[in-house]
Image 1 (cartoon, rainbow, N blue to C red):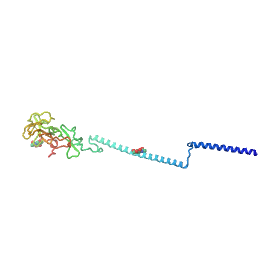
Image 2: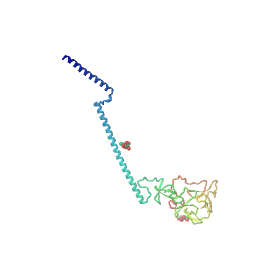
Image 3: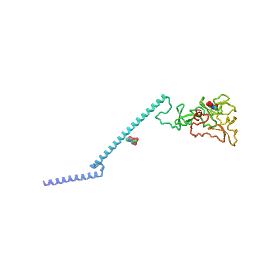
Length: 278
Ligand SMILES: *[C@@H]1O[C@H](CO)[C@@H](O)[C@H](O)[C@H]1NC(C)=O
Ligand SMILES: *[C@@H]1O[C@H](CO)[C@@H](O)[C@H](O)[C@H]1NC(C)=O
């Protein structure tokens, strides 16, 4: 019995020793490669949970923001839809009326640049000539904030222009204009346009600053741009827009184009004939 016990004990010891040695080698290999085993302590798991909760909250916030954005976009779409339907209505109204006036929803026009023509009710650029008859220009009406009308173009001031109601246009003074052959269009004593017999020589081109006129003081015929009755050196007979008859001048005093493009009271023009200049 004694002889069996000893080897058995040593065998047990041997097995124990082998197991221990194996455990040591295993531990050595695990310490060299730490990544293999996910070690999760309670603190780590708690941190992990917190992180997931945070990212969930962020995603929820982003989702809510997108929802708000969508509502906003929906609102703006609805607004645009409303505006389009208003514009459609305006177009329909304008088509029915045949009206050129801008619809009520568009901003008011800049009346320093554009005026409503009292005749046609259409909006016209101040200072333009396209919508007017011959020798006329579109002006703002003094005293009115919105209206304008065509009148004789005083910016062409080498030769006065006289309005004719019958033709609704302006003719050059001392030309035949609306008159019979052998007559010319000139001023009467109250500076209204009249047709009278032309006693002076034939003038040249209509747009030229050189033409014959009859002087109201001595009744003689004179040609502009010549010395005529002028005494002073350098002076010739020239017209200006604020004086119906050419006088002795060294230079013309035309209204510069930069002047406020307003209708002016000028003898023989439309405003004068309409009786606004008394
Ligand atoms: C919501 O709209 C704002 C402003 O337009 C934008 O900066 C933001 O990125 C949008 N958010 C989402 C989640 O689409
Ligand atoms: C001048 O002409 C206007 C318009 O034709 C007329 O009313 C006025 O009586 C005339 N004046 C004179 C003095 O002939």
